[in-house]
Image: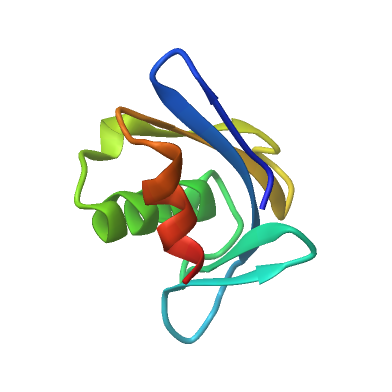
Length: 93
């Protein structure tokens, strides 16, 4: 997984599966963390669901998680503030 740590935040790439039967994080797929969400890919609903799923899994506020690239794509780059690289690496496991 391509993790970059800078300015108190970690960025990493995800592959989103919208309209999944249930929300799930992992495993890795082509070097990206797979995030399955039940929301459809319309009007930012899937992006909001990705933020919610990652924040819930890490036990942090939703405001600490943001989609910084790929807003309209299944391939996104996510930024998580206030966590270490090791915590994000634990998401894939």
